[in-house]
Length: 335
Image (cartoon, rainbow, N blue to C red; front, side, top):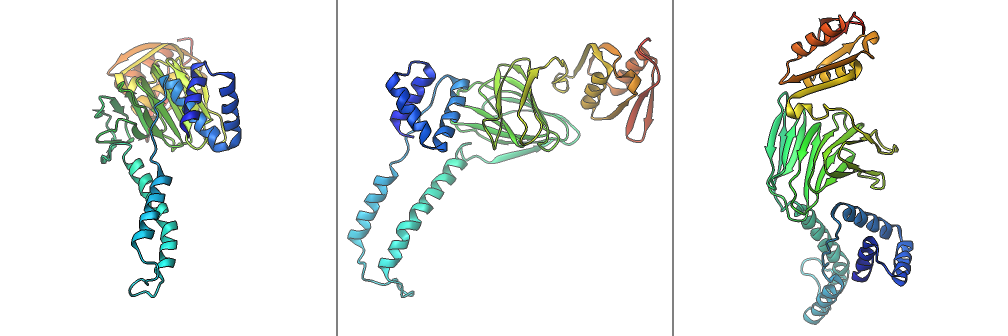
């Protein structure tokens, strides 16, 4: 992306682009799909940061021309490559094509490996216990049961990237560089905020609930399929070829597993059972006639037996254990 276009795009986002620059920008966008994709990525960065960071690329063309000039001056082209019978002129003709490809591949490798400072990746698998950790940038992460969390031992100044398979709650430190959470087929891009990511179902369902600040939630293979989420909102991704949805989140228990509390205020029992089952990682089955009963209650550091006892007393239902399942049956909303 040339410097002139870069500045024109910045002026566009600032809302002070001139008519002539607007025409130049439109012509550039109409030139190729790649240009439009670059513009879309810059727009996402601007929405999150309010600024654009420009990096200066190496002048590959001039460096390659200098290499070719020096090569032709030093090496006699009439010689043959020892032990091969290959004419050096032919050899260097192929090298002139292959060497740039090698150089570009090496450059890409070091750029990618350097995004997290070239640091080793650490994998945390929680099993049946939740875990809390603090990353090198000061970000706090709570990782739920049966989850796999990957992160770099040390982040670079350009980008902070982690991945989650399962569920994690993030309290992201504000450092000025983007924080990216890879979550299956989706990713979450933030600067500094508090949010929960749940993708236990192998990428087929991913939910992001924002507690504070704002995040950009997008599908990795189609970045245009994205939503900006603010505090009190939830984004849901149901799989490829489906748009990411956004709605207000009124569930007080989205991060209950982090603060060790369950809170219900006239909540339908169907939702109560879902939250309880998720919190304790149990298979809880509710009788259909009880689904719309309203329930209120507060539990701190709860035990599943205590919560179920309170629910059964409020509805006149009984708790039955059968194998790995727990049933709530009988009773009525009148109790």
